[in-house]
Length: 154
Ligand SMILES: [Zn+2]
Ligand SMILES: [Zn+2]
Image 1 (tube, protein in one colour):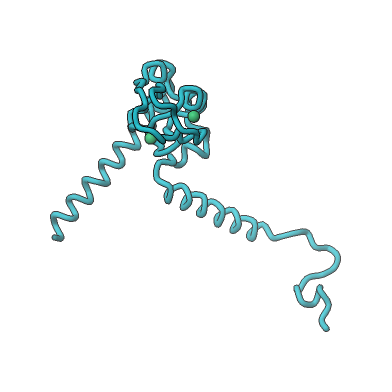
Image 2: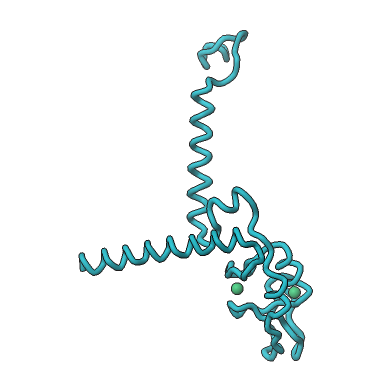
């Protein structure tokens, strides 16, 4: 039976670890996968989240969130998964998802998006708002190109 060292074509001593080329290749593979993962889950802003986390929602926006009375029985808060009491007040996000204030308020002090659908609330972070606008512009350009393409080829 061949020894471990024969099989792996390396020497028992003087092995200095993987070649730099190999490491570089690994780095490329990892980066490509991170990008693919981020792009697959729409709503995850790439590369923003790699650089830094999305900022919290604007305090003003959170304070002014609409409060609604829960009428239908059995409606659950998506964060704690407990059903609302009938007649209980819930915080309504612009995306129409309802939460206990005690659940969504701490969440929005950490990040700016709805935990269910990732709808983004406004933040107080100018740079992030600028980034969001740029992202929307880019999306608009892509949509325009799609529309143009469709009108030409259909
Ligand atoms: Zn809750
Ligand atoms: Zn939502």
